[in-house]
Image (cartoon, rainbow, N blue to C red; front, side, top):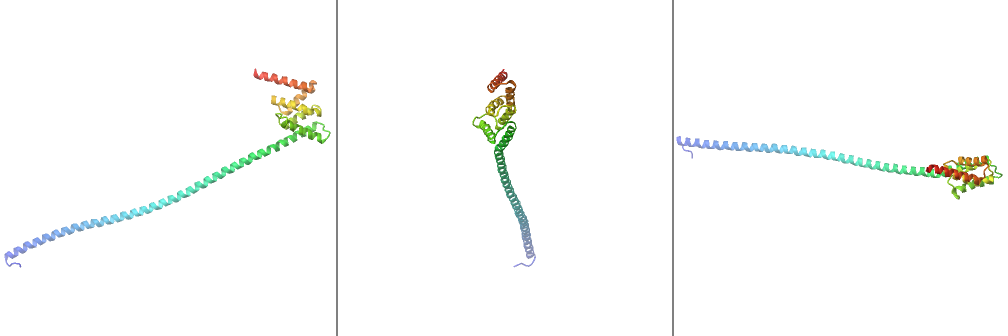
Length: 231
């Protein structure tokens, strides 16, 4: 109960001051709490924005990674296709080279046969064969020299020797025996069949030598030539 008079007024004034102080402190406390609350709200908002930004960046990074993965896959597929193409090309080149080599291998006997046929045509022009059988037998004898007798000269070159001998007037029956000697001399002097055949035929006709004498002369020339090379 508030007393009347000056004493009561004084007490009321003190209580009022106390109340005002409490209100002031309360306002200060509330203001501080409000400030802290505002800071928390601001921090929360900023944190929310940061999280959202991180999520956006993560999504963007995911898109970039997916694009890179797709490009890498396409690059890998392209490289695999290129390697497969190179392998096919390499295999094709190998097949082509094999085909060319096979063609050369198969074509060589054909060319040799054609060359021999042409050389035998020259033989037929200068040697008098009484029957086709004699001409055929001569061809077989020449081929046998390169296979059975193993003369180091091609059949067409031996045929050229026979043609050169026939053109020099050597009788048909002697041609087979004559051809062996120029073939050996041609190898020794690195002469063609035509050159060695013509040389021996000219020695035989020009000097009136028999075939054994011509061979002796050829051997003497070869020995002399070899001695000059060794000197």
